[in-house]
Length: 164
Image (cartoon, rainbow, N blue to C red; front, side, top):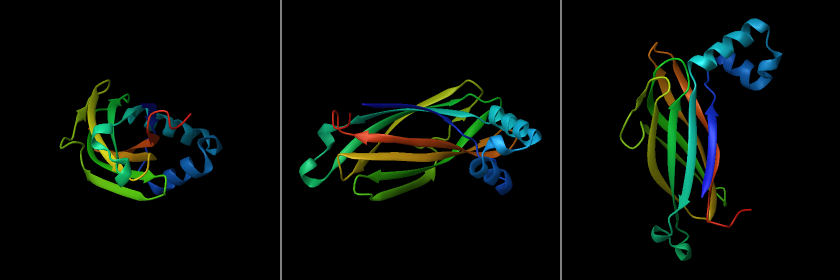
């Protein structure tokens, strides 16, 4: 079973700040912009924790069918309430086959999270190899109508005991 905890980085929807913050690095910004970005991070901050599990009863290795469930906790650790509008997943298997999934909300819901609140859900995916990974983002909108992406860092999908 895989476990991960990620503090999702909000992406300010202005191209300039996205370029500066993620390509040049926050440490190279003048102090004013560092404080501005720090303020954005505290206002719009979503934490995601993930656990994965191989579902042997649904899998068929002879047919290259490996099914995994993942349970995700989405927590608003920011200062402003926000609603999860949509999701974007990139699922990659060991043969570098990529599945891209986009859609409204998660499991048919668009949870509204006040500061400190969490939403937990379980879903699943199928890949053609015993090892793979998932990464993605949640598109969020805060009460002040600021839209931001909560980035979900890559996590592993793997049969038990196949990885160190």
